[in-house]
Length: 93
Image (tube, one colour):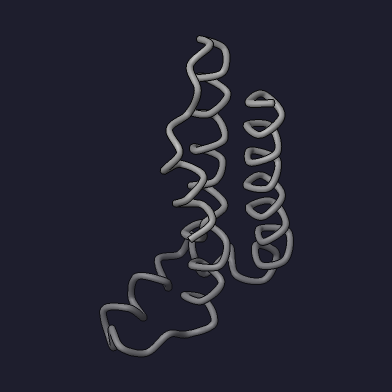
């Protein structure tokens, strides 16, 4: 069961990250790589442009953290260690 949970969490994280990149990267990756993302945030840190929003939606979303939690659960499962209950409660919250 732990193995299935780890794979499911990892799959959700990969799906969210890849899906958001497929959605945003074709339009905004040029701005990310040309430092436009950082120039806009330095000019007005309170305003969020489309480039910044797409960056937060794709790279800095919860998808990468889900991948890390899923891989940690898989790692614990391979060592026959039950993940602590706060792992599931934290994801649910």
